[in-house]
Length: 279
Image 1 (tube, one colour):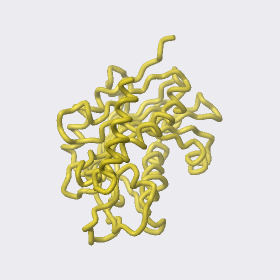
Image 2 (cartoon, rainbow, N blue to C red):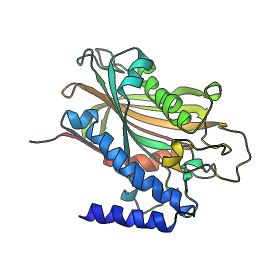
Image 3 (cartoon, one colour):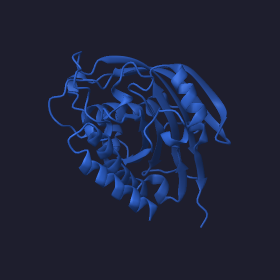
Image 4 (cartoon, rainbow, N blue to C red):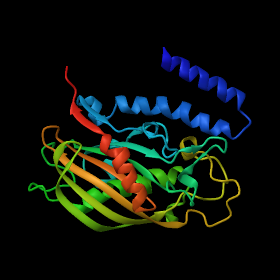
């Protein structure tokens, strides 16, 4: 009942603010929540009776991240990209909306959440579930396989959704530090990798509508710089193959600086939960 009342109130607000920037903020919330919920019901974890909870931005008092974590499934696209029969579920969040301006801090180069995401990836090998993606049989990381996941996400999903032309898309990562046998979320055996990523930032001059605008809002109207400029970001992932679930699970953060990563890790990502749902 509360959810119905919440969305009814949002619809009324959208109608009231239809000709203002606030409309873009409300539109993002009211479209992305049910769309994400549908994807969550079709996610790898849900179908296999696994609870994979990642907190949204409402868990903190700060104006930092979008209120709730979104879900997207892309089995066919990722399988084609890797040449393997895989299922991929993406859980993601980005910078909070400047409510009255109708756009996310994802676009703001002066914000610690510029070009930032956090969330999780779940990969299931449909061809051979006992063969983990991203790890060899001894549990050692296959860097190219793990790196292919955020690379695919950024270059085939995020940037194209904003209208970035294919010839301009760039993604290059370098490992800064890797640690094995990390305890995280009360679970042993994670691999923690810190890296540096050079890729395209989201800012560009508005020319026509793109699907990504539904999520992040339109780019700043007064932007006059280079379209999709290169930016240097810091990244962190925790990766583990769960042999009991037959799936690789990754938790990740990417942001302009290590302080944002540490804060997100401590206050949000580390409060995630992975567990079998009891019938």
